[in-house]
Image 1 (cartoon, rainbow, N blue to C red):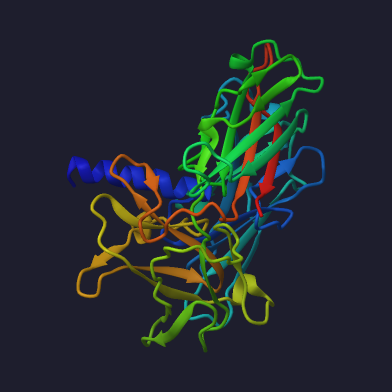
Image 2 (cartoon, one colour; image 1 turned 120 degrees about the horizontal axis):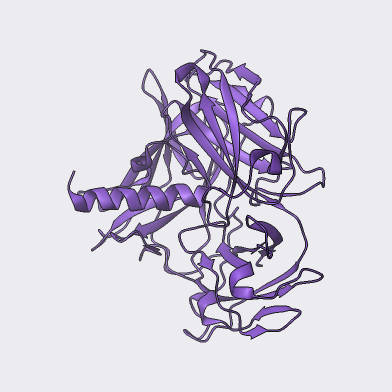
Length: 412
């Protein structure tokens, strides 16, 4: 592999997996899902000592039992390991516990075992706010790390206000959205903002275009304010595309037809056309939901199908076209890179997906690892996006960053 291709592959891996906030390392593991209180539309943020439950599940593509264990690690605001604290500072109980809830799939063409675990449980509770990584290890295979879930625990000490407007100063309100934010310290002692606070603002839980530590417009002893801040302007993007596969016997929303090749089912999406005008469409901002037509016993009765994506588009003059969304947790990240077919002028990709409802978008991934909206999608100020703001605090003498403020805004 050339140095250029190696750097591109590394940038692509960082881009796609970070957006999903979950990582899969084994080709045998699929459909890694993490939600708090089963809210599949929101980031995985738990409130400390509030009764919130983190639900984690995944499929291993066989009916052979694997003894999976989970290891929880506290992280800094940038997801690096918190080296300044000990395990008993943030965990009450035990770490490295086995995942004991599992069930073999029933009547599926692709055999799998569905595993699930909840945090907290009777063996493990969390004591400290901040960022966390939960690694899933295969004890039967030399503790190979097969997956990783990132989640956050909130101790709501500061009030966070969040707003979004189409009133920006750069394009006469055509293609961008302006985010505003306020942070009220309440009773938290902040004597040096630059050393004690870190902020992150995200659009649709994406890390490829997040805004980290933007300088506020107004600073006083009560808090911070960001108003018409040019560094909090986001490309508005477009509504996510979507499809739904609820049964392999017939096509549903967004699916043109389904074929059986003697071994696997293949679902062919309706060809996506370029969108040069905005059309209102209800979407889930990149999230997905596993389900079937009966919405019954979905964890172990939903089959896997090979989904064929097709986008009508001129060939990009630089970078590559990728499929992006929370669905992008396949260990083989090249699955989400689309190949151009000059014979019919389309980009194509095939991804094995479990039955359900999926949102996705097309992005142009440049060689430097940055992303932008490709010409086929366009940016429209009317696009309904979700914005998230996170505030981290590290007080005088404290050894790690804690999450003390969070807000999500659903822009309508």
